Image 1 (spheres, rainbow, N blue to C red):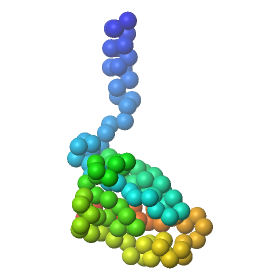
Image 2: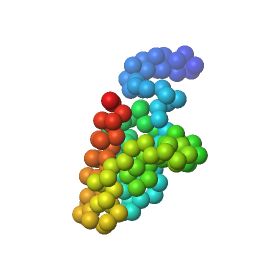
Image 3: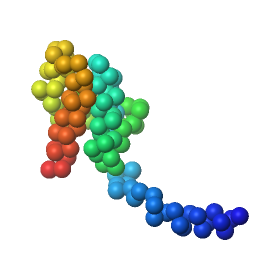
Image 4: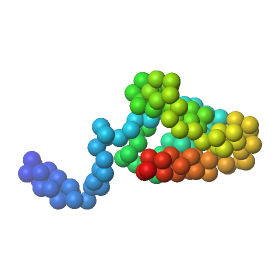
Length: 118
């Protein structure tokens, strides 16, 4: 039985997706609760656009950075690392159209990705 399991592991290993980045080297980000479940859309977009480069953590104490109101703050939340003024203004003013949260999350993550890639 043990040899069957070993053989299956060797045969199936090439089919498993390779992890592009070591989880230890990925930036750990905590996303605060936001209006209209925007935080949920941000989590999904980060997973889609920056898989392996950014890991979303569920506890703020485990994070290297925090996203709040479409701004990225350092671990201690004392230094503003990056902010999206346009998206922040639309979100907080209530000017976001219905269903606009997904688009806002997509654009925010795209902008963060461009900054990281620099």
